[in-house]
Image 1 (cartoon, rainbow, N blue to C red):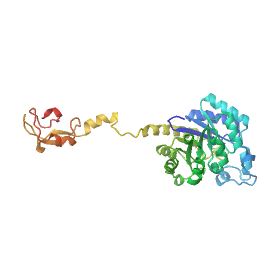
Image 2 (cartoon, rainbow, N blue to C red):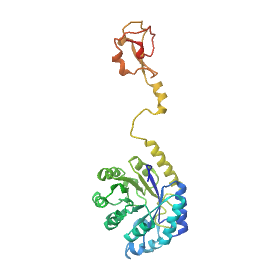
Image 3 (cartoon, rainbow, N blue to C red):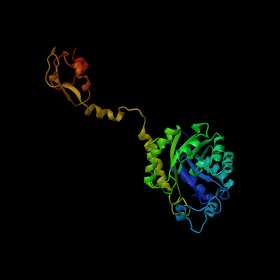
Image 4 (cartoon, helix red, strand yellow):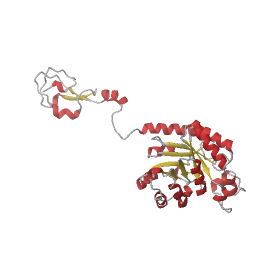
Length: 335
């Protein structure tokens, strides 16, 4: 990661278990200007028990008769498909990231050569997974949706090198309401744990992600899809390629607009300052050797002379020359 905001295009399971579609998502992520494309590494059998229910948004976006297990089973990518995707991302010049949902998946990704892991919000309580990831020495991006500060602290304390972790503020609903975003919590995370923070955006539009950059976010992640009308649990709440491209453009513009903490007159303001500020001028003619008093002083544009702060240093000085009304005073005019 560099000093720019690191933008992750969350392909997630929007490939629908189809490798060709996964390749297309990689291509799309490159085209929209993302720094990384992220997938999810799991097996349904290791992740869910047979009686696990789907949540409301999954019921709305997938067939009602389909179980949670069946939904996930058809969204799996095999190890071979992971290897092909990893290689394809390297060829395309975009970082491959994935979310492991268990230690075996994390081990596989480590062997694959990933440099960055991203953990799911739900796994903030899986300390065994975080213990494993902390020992890899890799970067770990930790989503914190649904989590309390205490739960986050437990995880942060596992990692010996705090420079290797980034906490993502997140609201775990797809999509989440603007009232639930609570973006100022990013500042709480930064202050409480002194680590890099970012934002995993599940809201509609790009406003929240752009605000997160202004709040100090170093990573922004957002789901994206080739087509919102495709089947699958996350397609509808994802950004399409045009929306994601606009998001990247807006984030890059926000970075430029934020600038630095230094406060100074910008080069493009210099002309305005010279014209619109006021200088000390004479309100009447002054003879050579005449003492300058308050009656001689006025403030008028342009701002190319001495400012009002110098009035006390000018009063009672004597003029070196005959000076006319509206003359802009300079230090060489008196003694």
